Amino acid sequence: MKSLHRVLGLLLLLLSIPQLAHAHVGSKDVFEEATAGPYKLYVTIRMPNVIPGQAVVEVRSSGAPLSGVHLTPLPLTGEASKHPPTSDVMKVSADDPAFYTASTWIMAAGSWQIRFDLAGAAGDRTTSVPVPAVPISTLHMGRGLGSLLTVLGLFLVLSMAGVVAASVREARLQPGQKPDASRRRRAVFALGGSLVVMAVLLYEGAQWWNVDAASYDQNIYRPMQVTPQLTGSRLDLNIKRFESEDVHRVRSNNDFLLDHGHLMHLYAIRQPGMDAVFHLHPDLAAPGDFRLALPAMPPGNYALYGDIVHANGFPETLVTTLTIPAGLPPAPPGVDDAAAQTQPLSANLLGSSFRLPDGYTMVWDAPANLTAGTAYSFHFHMLDPNGKPATDMQPYMGMAGHAAFVKTDGTVFAHVHPEGSAAMAALMLANPSAMGNPDSMADMPGMTGMSHPPGATANSTDNTVEFPYGFPTPGRYRIFVQMKHSTTVETGVFDATAR
Image 1 (cartoon, rainbow, N blue to C red):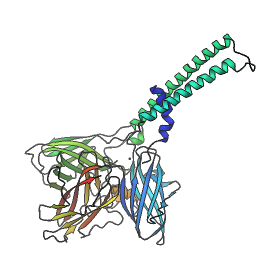
Image 2 (cartoon, helix red, strand yellow):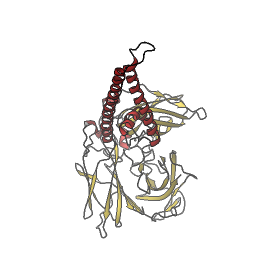
Image 3 (cartoon, rainbow, N blue to C red):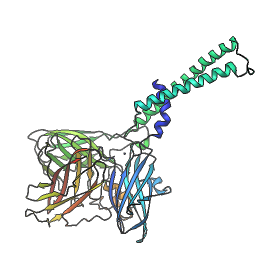
Image 4 (cartoon, helix red, strand yellow):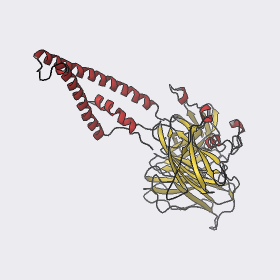
């Protein structure tokens, strides 16, 4: 029965793959603010759970008005990135001429980009948003649908066997002639033989199905394994090279690109209270070995999230845990390191104003209602000890700020920049002309220092930062925001509930 169920459901299963997949944990959608000359876009790309699959793309434009938008999915690097397919036309909303939607096929796993060709009175422009395309799940058939298909399949099998038996028994008889005993016996043998043949076909089909399903399961995205080793205050994160029978799916543990001047951005969040957070930057001491001298950290169990970007622009977040013992000798923090301690999780949410140790205050302009699956621009600003807008703001790693959106049950982690959730190194690969058209990553801005996306301001004194993001699932989240004033990197902590 199970074999019949699987084989008969194959076609329907393939047709019912969801239409709505990497760096962030549990947060597959991409939110990005892109600037192309006079045009400004807020881009939301809802990646599919399976590959091949369709990505749903939404664009809200501001700045100069657009007359049309075309999009093209293509690999981020390699020969295929030089030969884009025919672009798709994005459909403009009948109610809002600044809102465009489209769906597009992503045909293979890997590091991709969605290229936008913009047309308007201010001229034609092009910009691209990088996206990681990975299969993250398989679709299981519901019991009700499986039962229905099983009944229909049995009906088809028995009907076919009946047709074979009737053909042997009566096909060569003259009209009105009755089959004799010999023909009836042959019809019974034919009935049994046809059932055996179809049973064998169903069995072989089920075996093929199982092999194919197991092969697909092997391609489900799995992050590279990382093992922490603590020696005194020195932390080594040993990353195992990801092996695969498919050479194109092999991931190296020694091909990382600088992102905001660092090869890894490591968030350490104490559990279960999420009352201590550190944004640290280990160095690559040897292939697959990131090393860091830990600053002063309160003892406890920490969840570690390490963001890296491979040479082809594919981002990953490596996840592990670490226990910090009491009395660990601290090392001086790095110039870009940040830390904060606050109240542990409780029934009461942290407010929209977070008092910082030096008297400054970080404030979140929180929306009145937050719903999962909705794209937002989250605004934060810094006030000085007198409650006035801070005037000594400095860029933090070349940007107005950084943020981490973390679900309290650990199922979601997203490191987001003011321009969006895409990794800076991948953005630079996707928009080489905007970055000076480098011939190699070594010549790219920021590969030896700091990098800035199109439209970024590295020397802004604005006390406000905003992050485009959308909570992927309902639940409670804790938001950690880093901003810098003078020489101090501050971390504000806020709670949010998505409904």
